[in-house]
Image (tube, rainbow, N blue to C red; front, side, top):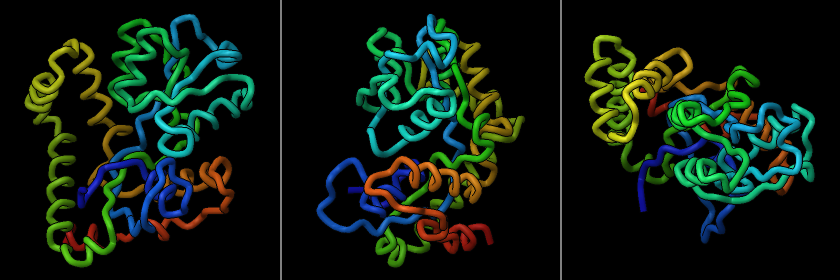
Length: 254
């Protein structure tokens, strides 16, 4: 239905390796052409959850069991002494649906992305851990498309990349802060001004949107390591270049 998507690097790998959540009618020919962010992921929980051990016997929500950021959730829990069986997992949809379910008390924790973590803190919820603090490098969102489409539309793809990079660099320029905040508030009028300020600081800061939309190769390797451990059917995945072709990015940067 679409020619270009902004999606998790893990999603591209999952469907290229036959490990995706949804059934597909044909073999995908997807590839990644640029980076976007480190996922901006946080494990956010109910106010009464203060430690990982407090999650024993609790219910956590994910977007899908086999793609997206579910493996990050499972891994953070494992690193802190919780194994499958120590907690329950339910599929609850995208980040907005999971955020609403957490607010309503339907689940005890979930993985959120910025700025939902900031809104969560403002409403009294707890951030138990940020994924980037545990991993150091992680590739979150990327730009992806089909190889067949890119081969026939190289100039369009290069133009998209150039426009996206220009937008990222505009956002990261402090002189554009007031205008950026105005755009944010226009599109999220329910966001309190203080949270909008914090959101800008995160997204335009050193751990926010990736400068010049470059792919974090070390972060991509971390995604592959997690998929090698938690993905089904089991596969050992180690080479980011199997899913990433930099030639369109490099052409757009000339």
